[in-house]
Image (cartoon, rainbow, N blue to C red; front, side, top):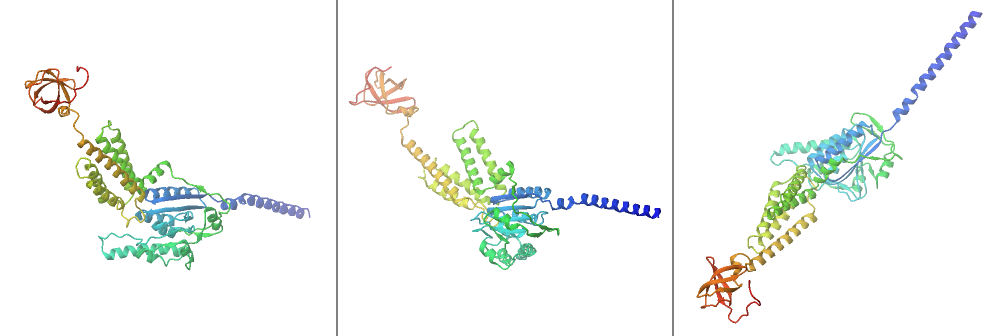
Length: 457
């Protein structure tokens, strides 16, 4: 009997010990689900202006930081007005293959995201637009090299159609617009995109707060097969701003900024040639031109237009020295405007161009500069020479030695040998200089003109 009691006690002790162990294991494993459910930050990136290789570098860095932090999502606010096709085609696959959910949001209202919107909205895990926005361009979305055969161009177009349509189908979005956009060109605003069946974009949101509210609970599947359910409600986003160097590059890649830097650099160097300043203006001009070159390297420049700008400046400058009555200036200004508007290849970079206001401003300033220069040049030509020997003509001179007909006269602080044109002139009389010939003056009596008052020294 005692044996049975001891046995029951042993079994009970073991049972209690097992319960304690189970509780301990549960306590240890309990926090794990909470850690697994813990969410990373919601990052935001803002892109404005022109999407170029420098923009791609910025977004790529932000994407790497988001993946390293296990971000809940990376929201890319797309406010660009133009894009370099080769660069946006490079960025889109990286967004599609991201290890964190990528939300592309075309905003603010009024944004015409063009080719960048068509590519990046297709690649995004969630495509969103603000009211009064659009994506796509009115020309083919693919710029094929005209030197390649038509079969090769068709193969390229087919690959782009398959890629864009594949991304949209995988996200459950409409892909019927893709082929027309690639082959002919197509622009869809937010209302048209949302009214398609199925829609071409998942969300239309007025601002970032509404967008994050709409994203709450949305299930996404990443390219690696991982499924994510977004938890964005009430969570403040964290911006990932560009670094100082990235800000400089993004600014230089603005086509209007690059054009203005090029013009100011050329003007500074020209000013150095006109009035040397120990290289100050030349150095400033060189820095401005290098800055413009850094920006132009990121854009599809038509170098024939750059040559046209140089020729235009040359014509305006030449008009200051050639009596063309402004004809060269007018020709130079026309060439300047045409070259500025054609500075970038619109087929390779839809929406990338110099702002009209900048072209008008530069043309107006050059016209004013040329008009002032021509006015001063004409005024100088019509003004009698007031320096050197020729400047003595018309001056009054005092006879210091009798002219019969040759003698000496005193004029402008110097003693000159002179010959009288109208007979002998006595010492102390006043004559007027009529010419200079081989360091001799020809003079003539004043013919009743009064001489200068007071003695001459």
